[in-house]
Length: 91
Image (tube, rainbow, N blue to C red; front, side):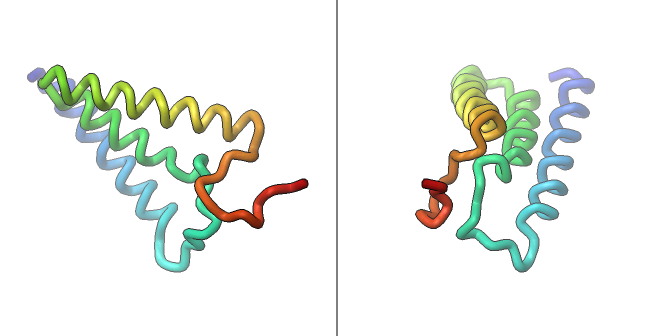
């Protein structure tokens, strides 16, 4: 493992943890959890991906990142994708 990959992986993980701690701090209403609120998890997953050297771990993280990014883009474009909360439907 190169020092640069260790640096970038650690940076992504640290930033993801900081943003997730800020996003999901005390008093967060988990009933209104949007897919768009989960973007710090993508940073953490990218950090683990960069640091990881095992092919199976990298494959699984690639799939997870792809799904999360696709859900995030869908949420940004249509602003209707929620994990739960039936009171969010607008029709």
